[in-house]
Amino acid sequence: MSYVNNRLFGKRILVVEPSYLIARHLCDVLRKRGVFQLGPAATEAQAHDIVSDNAVQAVIFNAELREGTLAAVLAFRLAAWNIPSLLLTHLHLPQTHPLRRGRPQLIYPFLDHQLEQAVEALFAPPATASFWTTASADVP
Image (cartoon, rainbow, N blue to C red; front, side, top):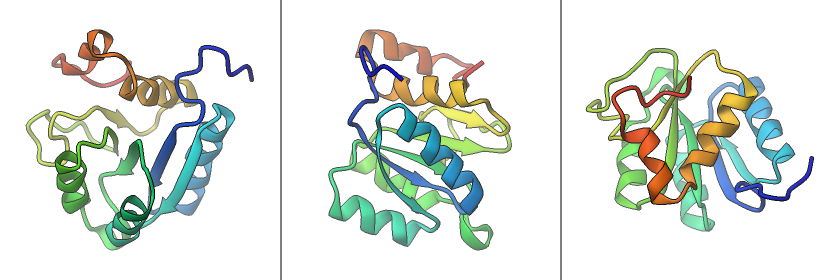
């Protein structure tokens, strides 16, 4: 993989996913793009500890965490800390949903290149980031 013109190279991204196998796959995809991946974390408490102790540049998180709890507190904190994030879900959530808070969403199942595109968009300059503000903010 060439890292020339790779927006993700060297970025510090936290993966918050309760399923170990899915988390490993997400981490592998990111690592192939040169990401310095943090985690994975399976709970909000683990994610909070990692964000507090590291210079996290973005977070990819599943809407549903360990024991079926929703990542509502994490979503709120990420917005308050102004950390770009990507929500992973099994269902489409409207932009106004508390877990979305205007953030992009990727719906399972998705392909590796869709994940890469969605994460790259988190680091896009403001002019091209408007892609996520449209009514259909999900990656095609």
